[in-house]
Image (cartoon, rainbow, N blue to C red):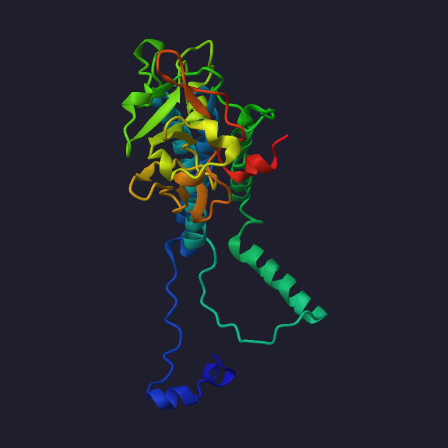
Length: 347
């Protein structure tokens, strides 16, 4: 708004559009502006929200240790639900309290600021400091110690949940991210959901895998407590897709010809982009598609990337058959599974 408009004159824009500037609406004082008791009630309401935020943060910490996630999906759901509830209450309460503070207690007088050139002179800096001082006075943060102290306390403990989350990233994993449960002689079993017990494993024979079929498979023994302390974590690394195509269509490197068996190939199910599960197989084109970001891999050429953001092929699991005709691994994956980060940081 120009000074001419501010002083009541008629601008060119007003002349063209045929209306005059109505000015600012009449200021209506709030109850807290005239009633000291209402002001005190509003202040306590804001402080209560900040205190509720602190309770939410404390509950996050308590729930983090009280509802420790186990290997069952129920325990993981409870853990996520209760720590998420604590984080939501902590963040929402700070925001809602700040809104109430601004709405009911801070100065609500309308004002007009004239446009001015951007600059960094000493005069401008002095004006900026004056604005900050004015904001301090209008917000009442200097003369409302209850609000100031509860807000500072809520913000001070709000980062504590993040400390606990970062705790899960350590200690440093060593080479755990580069090794899986696959090893020489490990049988391929069907992944029917969850973690199979040793007695319920369903190993796969080579003659059961028909051309065009695709199996989601896991390493035998993944449900054995002695072999795997955290089977869900191991499943996330060792998940494999098993497919069979016509051997004539395979374009195998000479040094990898013995990694497949009569057209049966096995590749990591974990996308090398950001780790999503690659689970869509188009048997006519022999393409594997990651549903997250559409990275596409060609099964006939060692799952090389033919489309999308992934930067390297899916790691191949060398397989063969044992004396009983069951499919078994020849070794672990020759390279890290998952996002390219792990390959770059491989020791």
